Each structure stands twice: as C-alpha cells, then as structure tokens.
Image: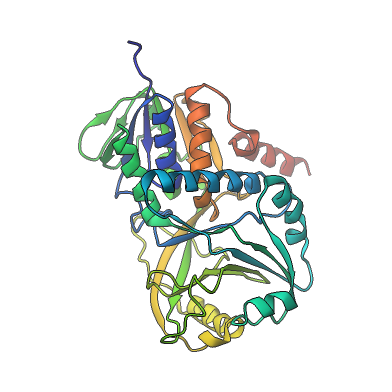
Length: 386
C-alpha cells in the first residue's frame, strides 16, 4: 500500500480544526496539535457565539465563501447530530449618509444565492418594535443567516476529526531559533518531536511569535471587549425567538446577538482595541468600553436601558493590514504553510478555509493571490513609489 502523506496541523481553532478534518478526508494521515485545547479561553475561536452574515461590501470573495460555509455547517450539523448554526436572521442597519458598503453588498448577495430583504426604516420598525431605528435609513435582512456556537463548534470539529481517525495531541510547539527549522520537525512542550511531510500553522495570534520573519507584525493582535446584559424578567423580546442578530454600521460599528442559552444579550464594538498578549494578558474589560456599549444599548434598545451586566468576555482579533486572511506557503520553508489573520471575521469561514488549505497543501497548488504573503511586499513597493 502507498504511504499516506502525513500532515501536522498546529492550532485547533476555526481554521486549524477544519484544515485537519478536510486533509484527513482527502486521505492524509493528520496530527492536530493545540496548546490549550479547542475553544479554550485564550483562543480567538473561543467564546460563545460568532456571527454568520453575507453582507460584506464590494469586491471581495467572502460573500460567496459565506454561502458555501453555511452549506457545510448545515451538512455537519446533520452528520454530527447537534445544532451549531442558529438561523435567527441577521439585520444590517444602514444609517443616513454613506451607505455604499451596504449598496455594494446587494449584487454579491444575489450572485451567491444568499436570501435577503431590502427594508425601509419604517418596515423594520414595524417588524422589530423593540429596536429604536433613529438615524437608520434602511437595512438588509438575511433571514437564513444568524450565529454559530463558537467554542462548542471548535470542540465538535475536533471530536469529529478524532472519530474519523485523526490524531489529536494537546501540546505547545516550542519556538525555534530559525523559523525554517520547522520544516524538519516540531519540538513539542511535552519533550517529543513531531515529524510530518507537511506542516500547517493555524495558530492565530501566536503566528507572529513562531514566524518573526515571515509574519512578525503583519498580524496585529488587539483586545476586544464583549458584554452580556440581562433582559428584564419575563421579557422575551430580546431572545433569539424574537430578535435577529444585528449590526449597526454607524461611526462606530457595533453588533450583537439576541439572548441565547441563558447568557444574556450580547453586544460588542468592532473598533480595534489596544494591542494584547493572548498568552498572559488579563481578560478584564475596560470601563470606557462598558460606558460606550451601555449608552448605545439604552439608545438603540430602549427596553434594555439600565439592564444589568451579567457577563463579560475579552477575546482578540488578529488583524492583517488589509483585513484579508493569510493562507500561503512559508517564503523559504516549502513544507510549511501559514494560515491565519482572521481579522475579526474569519470564524464563519472555517469549513471553506479548511477545504482550500487541504486542497492546496495536498495537491501542491499555489494559494489564491488574495491570501498570499507576497501581497504585503507589493503594497510596500507601491507605497515607496507613490
């Protein structure tokens, strides 16, 4: 029998878990390694929920990727017998003024086959009376979109991977003096060495530490505060049965999910926070962030004014300069692939990224130019010549 290609994947988050599972299904022998486990509190893929939406603005592949991802999420829900995607709908509010982002999203939604309704402020106010639509001009409603159970989904992917024959090991990769050394094997925190034919590093905010030359500061890790407020007793207007996921594209982009599973009404500010150490940073929300979201909550959702704060969470984004993902071979170590830069919007795309990575790695193909590291060198050259 022909020897199977051995792929080692570092990181069991949204990108790494799906890359491992997809590679396994393509016939590889796969070892998946994670320092703290899938969906852990330090991971960018941890926490309770992540939004699934197709509204993405102009000239991008993510609307089409969202359509494929939702198909894959639904297929795996049936296969694994557990709900991960909650189709509450997603409401995108366009405020008076510059609405080109929303306008440019409509043709891409149509092309991708993602259902949507274009609603006036009056139509939205009649449908969702618990929202104050002051300053909102119109909106996009995606009835089949919603949110994913993030931590639970990461664990489900790894559990499925192991059931299908993959090997999972909980250990950290020890950084090497030279990042090209990874092509010769991975030294793990338990004192062992992992040898494989191909290495996929999908370890989010830690990529810069493992690859100071290839990545370095290309991925900027920022602290993002998330808040959960308690709805009034017996008031179901702010639950997932009555309210969609929402996004308010104002001067500051705020978003949230309806109350679900007893965790309260989630709200967060998408504005990039200060730089953050995902390993040792203490995950305490700031008083300034709390003040901002509390004032907004009382304005946009009057029935939640003065609602008590019942839970907080600090997660992180790992932002690239252009907010596009990084999926590419290492510039020198040809056996090594780098996958990351989710930039606050990557989770939903996990199944699609997994498909792409497995195909490119196992078939010795080049990554899509949009995701290659070389684009940053091109940007540098353009900046120097301008």
